[in-house]
Image (cartoon, rainbow, N blue to C red; front, side, top):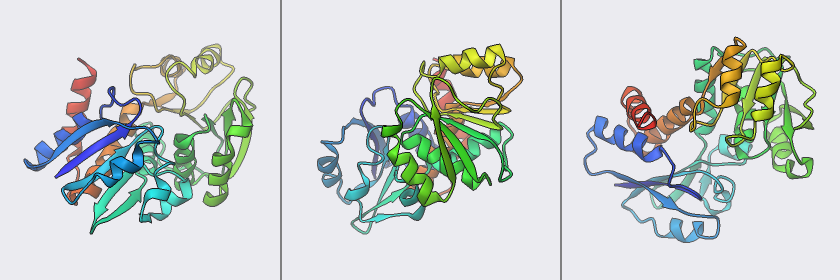
Length: 273
């Protein structure tokens, strides 16, 4: 059986390492997993080219939203979030799933966040598809509201729509001057370097999160993660998210429990090269 990760750019992806490690540990000798460069324009053709020998696809930027109208079935969580990072081919049909949300919940658990009271303060950096998954994750942990720091509120309409579907309160704040200064949880969904100004705030003590999840996994640690650790903040990195969302994909595609330890070892070894 075949599987792959699609995105643009995709050459840097660690997903092949994780999924291939899972196949080896599960004894799936006939399975393969590759990285395919694919933008939104190419996505319909790539999906059409996946025949009965394909188990599924992992999706990254910029495809998680674009894939939704191309699917036969979308699971409720992916529909609420407005993004699917996984396609599973079953019975000749395309089923969309979102494993980013449970992956974030598992990553936050590694930073000590196993539940949030309704009035908990949550600050999310960014307004893209990953920010939508972050909203769903903190809702799943019990939060009733969140604040998102965005550069352009006009481009955060998808995030606002997701908050309405998820029935979680959302306030937008200016990325350069966030209103929240002491969040219970800070989740950075922006690319490497984009949150460096927040690292400076944490270092100065003008931003004091109790827990941090930074979705970047390379290069790691990010300046934000370094500053947070030095300030005594519990930190989870993007590798934890990537690992747990990949484990969910393996289980959906193979119908077997994911060998998390083998995947973690392979991924950490690749990052340390």
